[in-house]
Length: 222
Image (tube, helix red, strand yellow):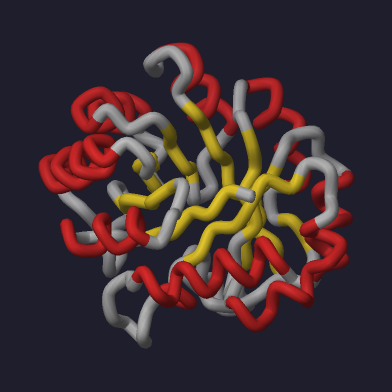
């Protein structure tokens, strides 16, 4: 099971996630107003630090649809993956697949609100455009997406996964104490792993290895 922790902004957080045994660390760039937003230069610095350790892969997390800017950031930072966390069209996926470096991993987030996927009619187009996997996350009633700390329903996750053809990650309020609430998701044949933010922090504090490790242990053993 892949474990991704999102929103690192410091060298210390990169070190904490490496110590926790995380597979991926999400670095925000092109998330206007986001609390973990990084400049292009800072993105490059933290991605380089993660890559230097050998075991932690950085992923650019973005709301941007500007493929030229995204390709420049990917090239400069040498990130192996991009997570399109906004409502980017399939053309953004296609441009990254066509013009991005060989092997670039493209993750497209699908947002669910009250069990309904807001991108339902586009899932096939994302697949045809070259997405590698989906990430299923919460869209709140007031329109928030990303780092909502609000879990999805297990049945809704599985139902959407069954209507798509790609492997998927799960996000949205995942904690050590709710791993047991996702029994169907965790046994789905295309389930890849989890994407966590708030449960790896104390409130709005930094990412911490002990909290991240507790989440991973629970999801891998429950």
